[in-house]
Length: 616
Image 1 (cartoon, one colour):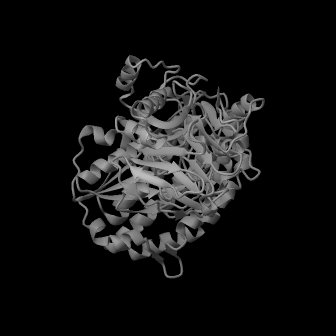
Image 2: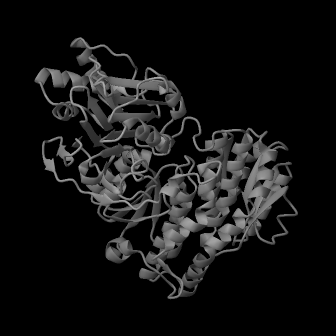
Image 3: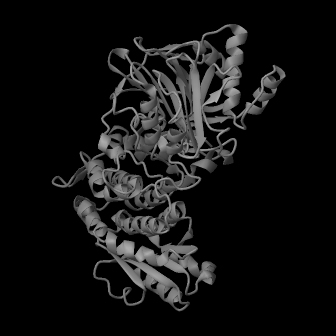
């Protein structure tokens, strides 16, 4: 979950590294550090607890010249956030520096062996064990840095993306990965190289990207082609990809936070998601992945969707969509639990992996297990070239652009939209979806962005409403049917960024326990759109009002019945029932955002969280 940046070339490394860390700070912000090979040939390491701004202050009076460097922004796993545990870590002789994302599972055994060899340790991290092991291996066998890294990693169990520099090898940057993302930017004529956990720090300088594969070790030297070998010494020919990421999408562009920018982006990015897939004139939805694998998908005994956090909530909506429109049984699993309970999966199953980053460690582990057992793996992710995209048999990108805010917003609606398109394609292909309803949904998809804009126009009203609830210590979110997972997602958003305890429930479950919590101080958010169970929701609202709960209701435009019963309403336009989550979630995103802002919280970088969970 940490962010790694590296540079070697003809420019000063430090400004590139600092800018890269700021681009990657959503991946971790407990501490930050940089290692530079100075023009004096010395190896300098500067690091601090806290954010990248703290690192800039610490390095302001220090030498920062040099053409080679590595940098790191940390989300703590082993060892509390502190300067001593911050990366980069020195080797014992202070000639090698290393940054690391991942977890070394056998670090205790390695540490004991190194202590027996006379090595001492200055931190509580597993990472320091790795840099000491590389130094030990290099000295014992008289190896180059590249060979020492390769040999050391043969003794490592765990996940890693690492970048290493050595005082004795000027301008050589060595990197490796296993189960943690790493990308290389290739400058013109191989005169410079950029290294990062994803492409966002690189695209300002080059669009030529190499995505490093598992168990690859890379050596980057300006003026030479990237050299790649596997752990087993197989030479790999670098595969350069052209990345077409819009630089503006990783900038705030005048907004106070990435989160509000990404909420407001949703009408536009969902148009991008539908482009080439939804033809409103021909009344047709086409996914190339379904066209290419139609028989395999339709012959599935069942579909199992795996995901974590927000992706899991999107999967719950996908379950209802696919079962309703395509009549294929669907199960939804937490990726983090899937492989540990010996699941029954075989060649008759389709496993759908949901991950915004395409790098979620638990989801990757889940699909590897499913693949070993013969299941067909279908990926739904946002990041082109990500590990999940390269591991799956087929899949669909959500194409909503990079999401920097830690609390997911546009990635959620992008995932739900792709699941909707998948359900429509499967339903039409196997003849279970009524043509009239199919065409109604397509018509409503055409106007979906405009309906989203209608809701977003209420943001000032929602901001005023949010200011009333900064006192709250608890919230309850209620929904039924396809809007129940939206209630879960709304509660998660509030927890993530405002630190208010919130729970989502099916509205009918209130009377089975949670109703005991209701009093005049308890805010309850109810999704009460006019669907086939509207009257049931009305009854649930009456039960809450009888106990003096303060209700914020999400209602369809023009609804007066619920409006006259509740304390506050936020209106959403009417749309086909199966598309409702794409609208009803937006007021909940705005509400959580503005409550957090009113409470003075760091919305984009909430405490203890990081964007891409690449460790278990």
